[in-house]
Image (cartoon, rainbow over all chains, first blue to last red; front, side, top):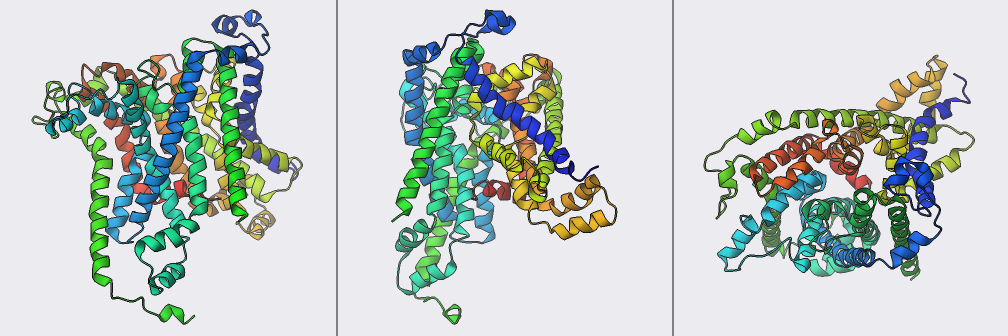
Length: 292
Length: 284
């Protein structure tokens, strides 16, 4: 093997796959989004017509699109702070002691993050069940009457979101715990010598030092909520009456249930643009706050 | 440093200990709540169907039975789904090898086009799956690979992030070792196989475990790309059971257990690598 060719031999298989399933799809999506491609165009390419920006116009006038977008917004606005605060709190508490018991507890919080969403959703769906579910039984013990966890339009958002918070906490707790390792012991000892209490030390020393981790978790969690799909897909299929239809569910239904490939592609690019803009804004905000 | 000798005032020793115990108790309650759905899953999978829809519900089965597991593997096709899932995981290990090779090339070689190729690797990290979903379906379809296990594994075979991790780690391998191997007459692939890979064992272990978890749990692509029941993976097969909730929750919980238990075992055995891998995703 010629030395000069060696790196190309090593890099080619992965690059081919990456281009084929990472880069090319973006171009294909952009092209399809300007056509009326649906199932008939899928079977016969000559049935595909160029429609320019028509899909985007339709999108703006589609109430379901706006419902999906506002649902996604609600999920993100409530979900991001919840996950960041809960996982940060759990991490700070777990970090209190390094003994074997605390180590073992870490695993428990982490397990939901690595288990299959379909299995998880089935379990929660059973727990949420109105007639024989465990949650309603526990509530009935304290006198609360039947709760419609998944069929009430407002409550269903909460129920679906709760599963996502339960799943999302473990992973971010791990990230915070890793970051907490980087907090110099000397700082904490110095604070203790100066008579600072636990709360004071946490808020004045630990949290500022975790700035980057909090920022990172904030950005990745935002992106995850904007792409929210699995939990509502399996638990409610976007219902009732679209109350838990996120942007991803909307796109999946348009694309694979109604076979509106062109329309769904246009929607997916809009979602992509929203994610990109929000991420860039977050990055900018961080830059500004760092200048202080 | 003399400050290290200084002892932190012990005055508050007792209240501190009490606080730690309080926190331990609180965290224990929290972990029980976190783990409860899994306990519920396992105990419910052992209940007869009539008991699983009984009201008030029981936490522990009154007459434990394994009949639902039997149903999954005899009346339903869970044996086949399990097989398909294992095949998908095995195929994704081919992708892991490709990613290790690419990471090596980016870490240890200089070649024309390296910079923009690496830029592409990082660029793919930002593209959401919703955008690639339909085009990928069309691409796989035009390759006649829908309803094949290879097709199902293909979209997630390589990930920019894993290539990045491999590259970061492999940069630390001393170039002298590679030169020495070449001087001894080892070919490039032998150098990669016998020196680079063994030296990358820590990152390789993390990736092997994460690839297993990701492949085992993958749901979207098997869902989109397989319409033939013979090619269902466990996750898609389990989703099929979803429609039967009112009928038989025990059966569903048995299915969920089949899917979750192997992951729990992998986690218990390889916990260090799993946590390390996920923590890496939080690094700069």
